[in-house]
Length: 232
Image 1 (cartoon, rainbow, N blue to C red):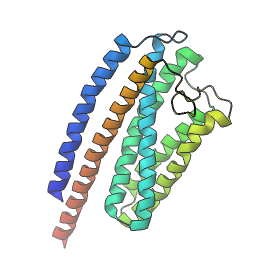
Image 2: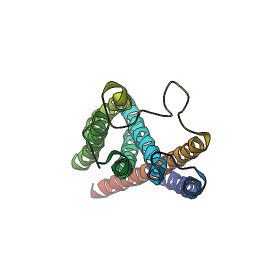
Image 3: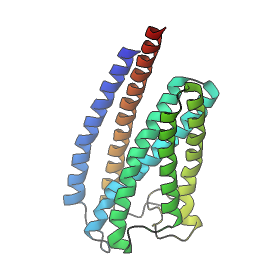
Image 4: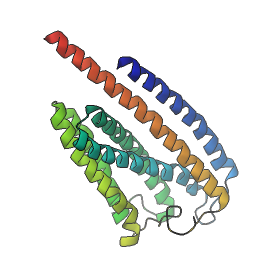
């Protein structure tokens, strides 16, 4: 298992390096070659960080939730470790999302934060998964930790589509989706190409980070088993 974990970590690092190179290319394109949005000006460039970070955060939490369902069914500790890896990466992307959102919102809305449905529900989801990580650090029994974590993971999965729909269900300052919607994307082709490139890069980051974090979880579990065996 150790060799497998090390190989997995190596592949994850390679994917992360590839994503870093892609990120450099995307943001050269975003800053130099993608046109300015007329009403928002240069502040709109944050869009190419904020939206992909939000996508990666919600993808992470959705995968965690799906793996949590699978864990409760199969009771495989490797699935629990993969769900935890996805949750931790989701929290990291959530920090980027919740940082870049106010930076973009301040010059456009005139305020750093407003307690509308989209922002509040997103913050709640982020704090829920901070609690997920804290819970996993407190519980020492693997079975109990896996079951409790899975419940939180499934709660997050349920919240993801609700967050997407908040702009339709409630009055909110947050703009409606301009890409993930029934009609055609509401972006000029140059902006859409830059956005989709950035989303692809952030997805690569997600894959690379999760592979490395999962490999670390496998190595940590192996180490704990070795220590337990030595103690006996």
